[in-house]
Image 1: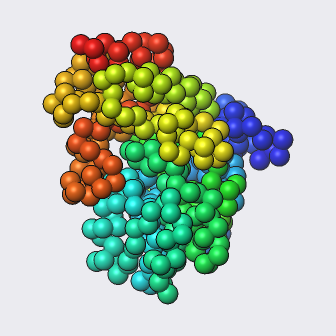
Image 2 (image 1 turned 45 degrees about the horizontal axis):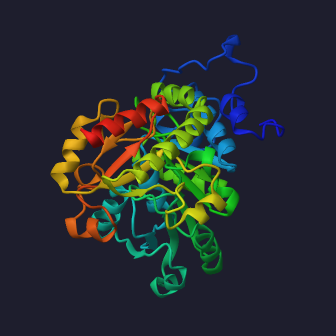
Image 3 (image 1 turned 135 degrees about the vertical axis):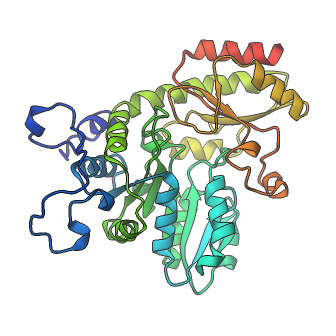
Length: 385
């Protein structure tokens, strides 16, 4: 990458692109070929083959993602969960133990709580805002610590600086799910994390039309994760690579608009008499607001809130919304709303959800790129209807 391309607006367009362009094509072609001619590769993992995630479409994404996150290397995967599970299986091989934040995306939480033991792995959940308590959870076989930049769906901001310091002090690999922030708002590797993970389905692609994942960071770790993924088969299809490549080029424009729009919507909701609470790090009332201001360039397009009243009142409110779509994903150009208790965290026991602040009436909002005034007006009519 040209060292002068320090700004993300330039990196998303130009980083990783082939030079010279393929037959002069401004847009990288889709290489819809399962295999490529053998050219003397000495390692199985270097053979050009779709399952090995090393076709021209994959390689451009790897270089671009590494540039965006200031990482040595990157790997795209078939889904965000493929990135998470393959990374953890690689780093914890041989019966390792993981320290994990106690409020995680439902799929990650389920993998730890429902699959780890059968795989010979173990974990301890830690309060990510109480680093003084982490040492008591260490075991001789603890190998890594795992956190999220902003938790899904309560938007907590962990003591990320303490997580890095703790990992270095105890020889652990530090992993962070940076999906909610995206590289526009936060670069974990620049703050000392070893690996940053993404569900590219969300902000990186931004158009709700593919499922993909990525892991970015130290080259030695990425190589190990890649080798395991090559055997597990979690490869990304070339057409999905093309869609992700195209979507990433507008990442900076989309996320910065979503940051500002979400902040305005959060302020409106926080001031409304029918709203009980709002979870958004950009609000001064958020318990981790000062930390978020210090670490992040923006507060993301994600928020969650609760209305006064019961679940039925929340369901009536959601039904009255006209612009947002009721759907379980996030990070796209359209505004989406969902109740995590029925979607992303439905696999958790109700008592466990309540413990980490996910009530049955909690509403998560992924703010899109519609006009902010139209969004606010729509939420207003739904609240007052």
